[in-house]
Image (tube, rainbow, N blue to C red; front, side, top):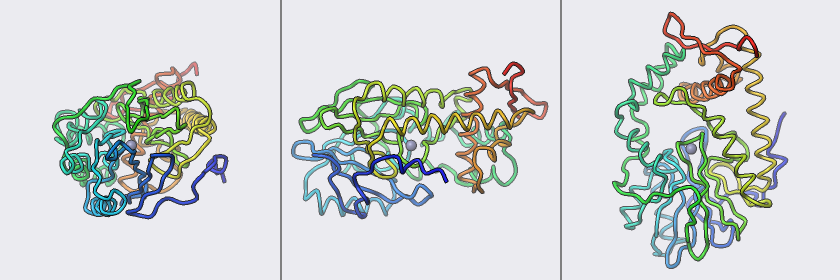
Length: 348
Ligand SMILES: [Zn+2]
């Protein structure tokens, strides 16, 4: 069995227990919150920031997570305030409590503009972000029957998990140097997983808060959604990772959103490049005749998927197919039945 995680170095054998805090690096505190789906958990970070603490990501906006936050405030924080809430990106496990925490402490939200705006669009279920547009997109890419009812039945799951959201924020941009507790954290924007995902790097500490852009055990979800159906997020993601290896020196301690902190950034980027190259090769073998994204899910994921996982798998399948199309290795065909299919290009 392929166990790439064994090639990385993990300085911590186990995460902090729920409601407790562990120091991952000087002034960088590690918390873990549960997630009620296969991902299981998310890591959050609290950075020493003068009299208070700056939070990086917040967990899902539900009662279980808020009860654990309360334990942290009563215990580790001992009445110290939250000075600001930084969201690496808009996904609900990261941004679910930005409104609740901000209101409670009067703390501003710091976030990229693309993710801030898209969070509103998903919450409002508006225009091309509406559920009917998503279902039409899935049908156009070959999803039918019971599987397509899964996402439909979920309703506005984004709003459910991100129940409130601030009406103002402070925009952070690529290259910004955030002064937090006497340290400088550089913003590295990454692409392909979210519209504009912020990772934070402290050069003097040798610490990279990678968010979802670099994970030790699983590969980051790379999806095409209905508002940008021709997008090439896999190319964006791989280019972002390459840039990290160029701009971050040495062997930083990587603090990921899922899994354990690790060293071996360059090794891990190489593994992910090889992983996606292998998936692309398998699709080339599979698509000697035209296939829809739904028809190649089994090529990319060799296990039974529920409706929720199928939704993510559709996005991932289209991301790989679009990558091959943009590279000139695949052609895209519009079928008479209204379904889009992809086939290996004649010259490829
Ligand atoms: Zn994410």
